[in-house]
Length: 457
Image (spheres, rainbow, N blue to C red):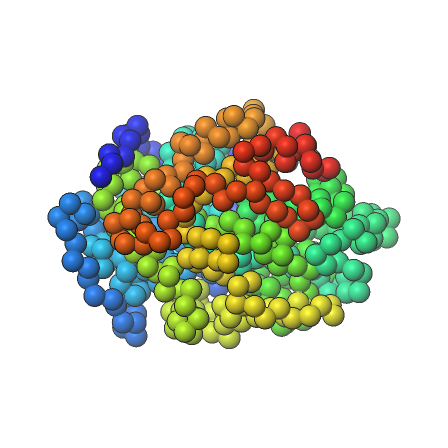
């Protein structure tokens, strides 16, 4: 077994008043009701746990307890299932606490103080939040070293449009609707307004890419802002919000409640794109290397379980419960079946592979944290001029990826668990192709940036 680097000592500190502007944004939970401060996420008696593995002494975890945060959206399913179905316990992690977070900013603040200070040790993250926390960029200058350990899911997001814009040609390719969107100040007295849930991360990137591919500059032609989902949906109802970059099951709700329609799913923009990830404080991982791998083994088994179509009904029952998503089953069932009503005359999508996938997709492994995907998120940050003076160029981005991404730990855990057939041979998934023909070659990110028409670099 390898020895994990011991570069960082445990830090205990409180969030100071000098936080960045991004860190002051208050966002409600992405789905379901806000959690109670002491929400019980213990196992449901309705679930059947898997038997405990015969753990060899050299693989036995140093501790059995960790506190992981989650946001109640489909990306969290592997963490919930690993807890409820006994996959964590199978590998000796019998005291894992899954803690519902009110919003992304709260999760960030809680991991900054750590579980010893009443927060969390890690959990589910939009990208590249772990990299930004490591550098102190979104933590008020306080560096909180994190390790990215696994990708949790692919797919599961889309761009919703208010019914105000029915029949205007706002679909996957919006070149034909670009002038309609740009002319809003003269026709409506305001700019076209779009929202996402947290700045400079996944859903912000998805809508920016889609807009720019259609000739819309998201920083000039429209108002693009961070807004809580409930407020955004209400704005779509009353005509003050035009678009929403959102995750499942909000697309189903928006269309089924006749609030709006879907311009596209993110899997149409970038097939089987990276989504949200498991990341844990580096000091916890360095101190508990065997427990880290035990956690990963449990999550890997949970991801495999989640991907079996015959398990999706039980998955819906578990995650929809009040301790987790706290929503009706019929709201979350269609996305887990790959069924999306698009609206605005678009054909419905009925494809299991276009819904959330957790372990494998048609082009490879989902769970493995490819360094090439981390690099895209940081390259895209450079494209839009995010964090100027803090992430200056591709060389620095690559150095941050090498510091934060611990795909080597994922490989060791998969090897020990016997999942050898699904271990990728490279830290790169290779050249990625977007719907508009643009390609991202992780061996040459500069060429990707040069190929883009709308950018800030």
